Each structure stands twice: as C-alpha cells, then as structure tokens.
Image (cartoon, rainbow, N blue to C red):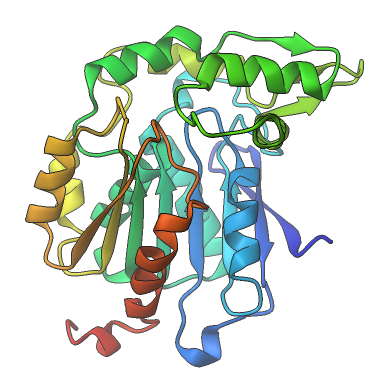
Length: 299
C-alpha cells in the first residue's frame, strides 16, 4: 500500500526535484509534532526511508527527499553542482515550497552533512536532528572506499543477480543479513531501465566532484555542528564504521548540550535506522522535539 504522495519542486538552476511525502495532510501537527525531513546518502534515495516512515505512519509527517541526480530527481547539467552547498540550496527550496518553518532533520551520511549545513543556515527551525554515521571529520579509509566504487555503473539481468552483487560488495557492513535483506537493499539502490536491466538509480557523474579532496563536505563542519548545540540530537554510529570514528562521535556528543550517542554493534557504514537497538533512542529524540522554539524554553 502506498502511504505517500509524490511531491515535486524546482531548483534554482531549473531542475525538477522529487520527494516522498508521508502524511502530507499535516499528521502530528495538532499534537505539536514537527514534520521530519529525511536526507539520503551519497548514492542513495528517498526509498531508504520507506520503512522508517511507515513505522511513524499516522503520527508524524515524514518528507523523504531525492537529492539531485538520484531517484526521481532530475540529473544536473553541470556535475560540479553535485556538492553539499548546492544540495542545501535545493532543500531550502523544498522547505519554502512546502512552507515548513520548523522540522526534525534526519541525515544519512551525506545527508547528515547537509543537515548540519541546514542548521548552520537557520538553527531556529531545527526541532531535532538524527545524524547517521557521519561527522565533521570523515575517516580517510572510508572516503577511499567510497571513492573506489561511486560512479562505477553496473547492470544485471535480474533483481536476484543485483542482490547477490550488493551482498558480495557490502557483506561486511551488514554481516547478519540474509538474501531477503540484500534483495530489499538492491531494490532501494537500483531501478529497471528501459531495456529491462537492473541498474544503479543515480547519475554516475555525482562521482566527479566527490573525487576531488575536500569536496565531500562544507568548509567548517565543526562550526556547522555547533548550530545544533541547543536542540535534541541523536548521533548514530555503526560499531564497525570506517566513516565516523568513535573518537569523532564522542567529540560530537561532548560539543552538544542535548545529544545522545547510539551505536549499532556489528554494523558498518551505515545503519539503516531500522535496527531494533535504535528504536528507543529514536523514540526519545522524537519525543523531545517540539513544533515551536517556545516549547523548548530556548526562544
């Protein structure tokens, strides 16, 4: 059953962008529950948040965006616009289009970088944040691993072939997964092309700026994180992550007033946010987020 509406908006440079809107009728607003804005990782899309959104169905409005060049969003004419500062501009346009003045932001990996930059641009509108397996400093080993595969196209004759390929490439990230889990991930990562082949669901050119050292984040990410100091923040880390180190995660928590760290044992980069160990901390974060800054006592 489809629980979302497809929303489209336009970027400043004329791209038609897409988001899924779960509970677009304003679910949760009358209880003071701010909407939740979900931002995916580098090669991912709005489908990553389907399970997360469905678990909140009826009580929260969840908007899951496709960044430019991913999913149902248009591909950029200039590949150098595939960078965090442009993604922030695109999301600002979405917020204006939907009239969202205050929200909880959930950022997976690259989405977490965009979330921190959104907070730096307007901290008063952030009711809470979940930063999933990324921080102001990114481990060199993780960057090297990601650069080794991003932008390398692949095509398979069936979904099961794609699932087995994803399992072979990323088995160490989710060592406990069965083939059904990998098939579900393949259907989030891939799409069917016009010839019936299963192909990655993003523009291969997103790799061009990412391969340039320093382009993977903003210029002052610790400063951006500081904009979240007074709001509830949940930092999620995969216990085996090669992107967010335990040292950086601990420093993030120490620099924020209302932050909690949740680690998912035995998982690499990045947790899916559907892991049972995260149910309680995610619930606490959402319970502490309020629609108005006056409810927080920090106006």
